[in-house]
Length: 306
Image (cartoon, rainbow, N blue to C red; front, top):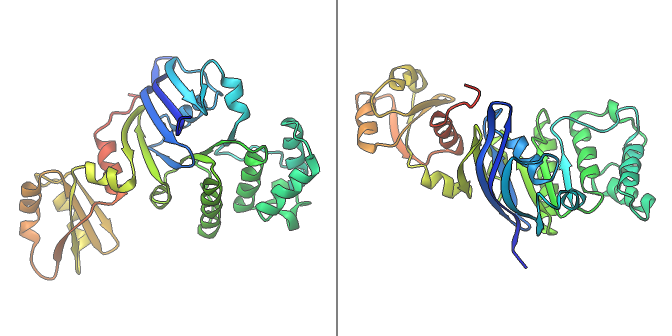
């Protein structure tokens, strides 16, 4: 038996003249949480939908859950949970009624027991009679997750599931995702939040249709080749405009009153900050952040809308 839940290569998809996914190959181990990152319009959602059989790729081959993801798309769908970015359940039904509807769609045995179990697991029991349309973003998120997993999928795809959700709800959501992963569920989640990317076991970065980085957060940072210096002290952040155009500087990012200056040529970067190495600003070399790396990757890619 393969240890891979997802093993596909040469994935392509075009809509008219726009090539939105270009020769993407990706492998995901069973029970892992893989973060899927990239700018808006980069092909993340299209890739997720092809993997679970909702979209047919123009080309590509491989397996999802041990099944040919093109020839056995219906079988893949039955074993996959998919939580869309936009809340897609019925707002004029209660939490309980929505879950009962989903159970009927999947023709689940012991339907009432399964609904009750889902309500209990996601902390929805006390609100089970509340209309879905009256829920806050965090509670809608819990309901959508409950609906996505109540049929016992082996693969869970989450498309920007925490957009617009408060920090406490986001943390509780991620606690539940890690609990599901510990039970053997494989999860792929697209997100724009760097702190969420760091909560994943590994990450994949796609920019305008092309997979540009793959590995753990530490591996992606190490392979980036970026060197970063942090300037701190009164007025450090105000140096951003001058340093942004200096030779050897790939990017500059203020962090509060501090400043991150990054580049791939250490000597050129040190020469760029040399005129500013004087009180009251102090400089130290720091590890690049994921945000530093991803902004660098975006600058190296071209928008396929162009």
